[in-house]
Length: 288
Image: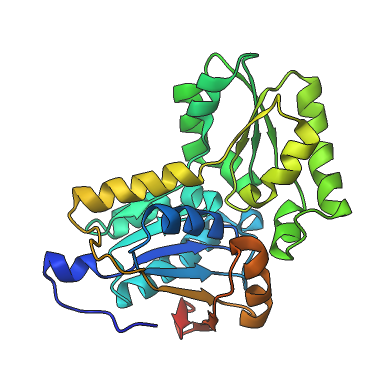
């Protein structure tokens, strides 16, 4: 990993990395979009695979995990943190913004607004975790943008685990998606929102199952654009013409995650290990 500057000037801060984290490899869909839009930016990515999936955990657990990761990022002087996890955004984003008011966060929210604008049948499907559906953020999005739309929800049990294994087109992954998509299509759904950052990796399979008549909304490009907007607004965008450096970390097995990268990213990258430790106050802390 490149040495990070501690100079507080705008120019020095602009060279500091963007931090991106998720419970696993799903946030790499966001990483890809940011890397494509902002190729000169340095990036630190954490896959907390020791605790994946976040969707089955309590709000308190998710906040603790997210807080610890953000604290680690700040020790590495990241200039902006992307919470590349819908579940963590629903459970912890408000908490993180209150705790770190001087730090800039970009979070995920299910793309119900563009879905409501795009649908012709006024019937929209949302694929997300249970924690996302139960969160105040999702309820707020529905209240603001989906009053005139019928929304069908599904937690896609087992899909995150399939993607974590790299099974993007297996018989089991197809079975999971068919069990979700076919009933939605029978209800007249013409637009599907991907409310989990893992799910863009199975868009090709979703399109095979649903056909061209179903619009699939991938949030990754919008998150990249929001990241770019905020960096430019705060004059923190890296204007260097060189390719930015990426440092990827996992809290589980670097070798296992590394094997997935050619399939998920189309390239091989080194994955570094991170470890959780529990101090005397039972507070989780990441150690490199």
